[in-house]
Length: 138
Image 1: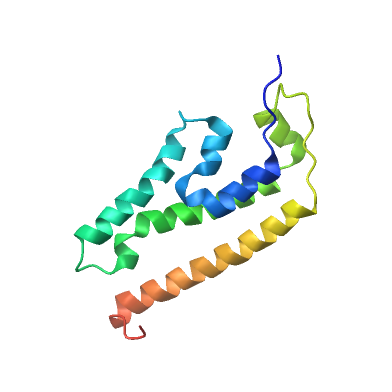
Image 2: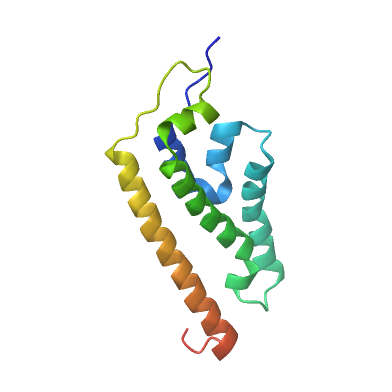
């Protein structure tokens, strides 16, 4: 009996683009994945926090969603940089197919690293601005 082959490049793309809501986790592990549901719950919880905590800056009220998105970037890098044989042993043991990474995966990884690093630097800069100067620069 063969199972569906889980594509490493597609999983990496899902983690990079939709990692904040856990779409890559549901693709890999199905609807019973607890971490996928934690990613998905970060969106409504952050929206509720922004609405209820109106006197708090949105950056701090929505920190759960921000952290979930950053974790999605990190997961995309881990998924994309894992060797193909290790990926197949973990996610495709009975699919009967071999994964073969191409230049598209490298492009996704470079873009993910660039966007993720920029997001971390921007988050640190803005949070330090808000904490130490009271938001003097915006």
